[in-house]
Amino acid sequence: MSRFPDARLRRLRQSAPVRELVRETSLEPRQLVLPMFVREGLSEATPIGSMPGVMQHSLDSLKAAAVDAAEAGLGGVMLFGVPAVRDAIGSGADDPDGILNVATTALAAEVGDALVVQTDLCLDEFTDHGHCGVLTPAGAVDNDATLERYASMALAQARAGSQLLGLSGMMDGQVAVIREALDDEGFHDTLLLAYSAKYASAFYGPFREAVDSQLQGDRRTYQMDPGNRREGVREALFDQDEGADIVMVKPAMAFLDVLREVRDAVDVPVWAYQVSGEYAMIEAAAANGWIDRRAAVLESLMSIRRAGADAVLSYWASEAARWIRSR
Ligand code: PBG
Image (cartoon, rainbow, N blue to C red; front, side, top):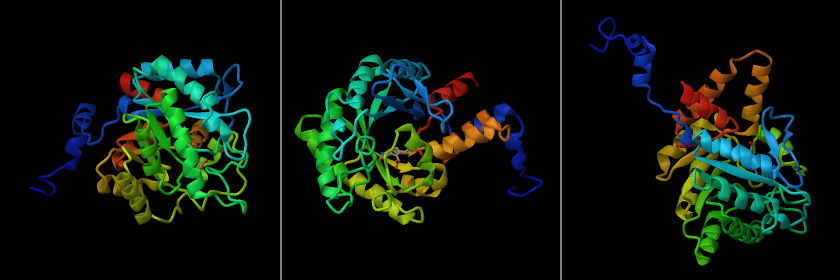
């Protein structure tokens, strides 16, 4: 019976209702998280050239977009701050009056009951050299000195009202150090998302415009080599051991194999980040009429879910959630 002509696999594809009934993977608004950029000193939202449809927000336009995300039924929003002034140690990052912390408090009040307000925990937007940590006199990224800055940043974000911290800096030991700093101050409920397998990727290109990145050179001494799959799983296991509540693979589409292996290896939720370059490629092809935009976006999100992501960070999150609901 398991052979043609008794078995016919096309029976499962004969109509839309049958296909819906047997689809293995779901894609729901609650599984989507919207990354958002807020820029200090802006009076209105400003478009990002390399990410058509994505904005650098003012505080007001940020709130409006977060309300829109909540109405779309998203699981959360992930906030990135773009400060007006930068320095060597990223002082704006743990300043309670820094743009990211101010915006976090505003969003927690506005939408904190409807979705999970999340913050990026990394120094790169705040340093004048653009690296994710502080530097030694010789110019190398100093792992352990950076951990102290991260602990301070974590407390500032938790105090501002962030419910989930996105640890994206790729410093060794960052999860353990931040967990301890939070617990010492009684922030036992603040969730930690570890960007565990974060690769040194060309697909971050448009993001660097979005956050006005000052980076010269690259991040290959801390972000992972794209050739390594086993090491991605090892990173995720380390972070789970250190107390990560959720682990992440990033970028998504060029690393779906890593995503699947990580999903199979850990017990915590696994998320994936559909990054700026993935967004820009589909937008550019669609703008040229070379691809069906909506179908390509939904297929890309479905493929990331199928590979093992329990939730996906995507710049299309609000729009895709509405497409899913109107289906
Ligand atoms: C670093 C960070 C990066 C992204 C988010 N946070 C990457 C980097 O600059 O190395 C990329 C996100 C994207 O491309 O959409 N804190």
